[in-house]
Amino acid sequence: MIIDVVGAGSLGLLYGGKLLAAGYEVRFWTRTAEQAAKLNREGFKVIEGERIQPIPPSLIQADEIKALSRKRGHFEQSPGEWMLLMVKQTAIHDVIRELGTLNTKPLNIACFQNGIGHLEDLLLGMSHCNIWSVITTEGAKREQGRVIRAGKGETWVGKSANGCPASPTPTDQDELIHLTGLLQQAGFDCTVSNEIDKLIYRKLLINAVINPLTALWRIPNGELITKNERIVLMRQLYGEAMMIYETSGIVLDVDVWEQILSVCHSTASNTSSMLSDVLNGRQTEVQSINGQIVSMARRCGLRAPMHELLLHLIEGMQPEGVS
Image 1 (cartoon, helix red, strand yellow):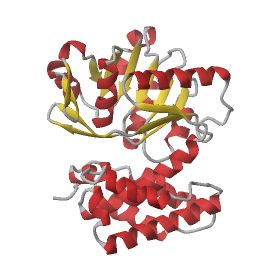
Image 2 (image 1 turned 135 degrees about the vertical axis):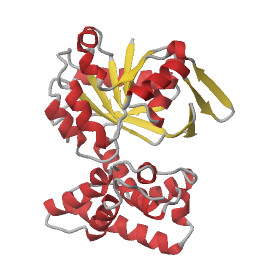
Image 3 (image 1 turned 90 degrees about the horizontal axis):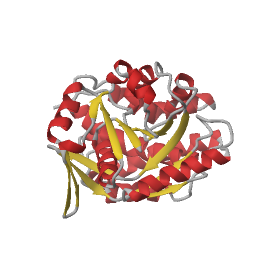
Image 4 (image 1 turned 45 degrees about the horizontal axis):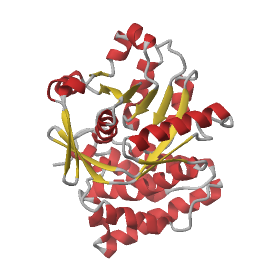
């Protein structure tokens, strides 16, 4: 069985490495040719507490994402049984452009992206594929040839009504059970969710409160809750988004604020992906996170001034980053 992991960042290496260690064949598709060459040459290690799992070069198959179209004949003859889409929102259209040229049988694509909006883009550009949503609270850090499992979390898979309006079929349910089984076998706490959209919007809200503030203040997640002034601003962002959710008919758990605080505690030493992008001068996912909340507000006749301010502040940092 072949599993294609598109995107070899921290989560891509964590999931791909543990699937390899569980005995599955994994192909990595990376952002650059240099990244692929390094993986093929050196391999990497998966670190979980005191446990070190070497992933030697002999197990690695890596190439850049652009090679998908160059190797289309080979890929079309043997597509992976599953494609785990691990790239950030900012690279989604590049992936669609590459995959859209392939005349394969329908691909099963599991999307791990933050934010919203990508499912509709994928369905439009790859209408022949089965698109699934994955929400995870797994934490991972990538450092010098190794990926560290920074916090064991939960993973949920399901079919979103936003990207796939048709009701799941019995075959869909079988595919979901298959994917959860693969991930469980690899050591992840993975379950099927019939309420994946609720989980998507919950994660969107958590990210919209935590990520831009850590990026602006250049602090790890846990530092957000060490000062009352920061907590007040977090609470205001949360309240503004919840009002928009309620007007839009989106119902979440009543304890989402507590969940935000819990994430700050459990990932206290983590650098958010948005902060990492800003520090490295990369385009961030702020448009797919806070920008989506601003768009939701406009659609229901409201405004989201705080989220809109953060959107412009973060976008104003690009592409130079901060020192």
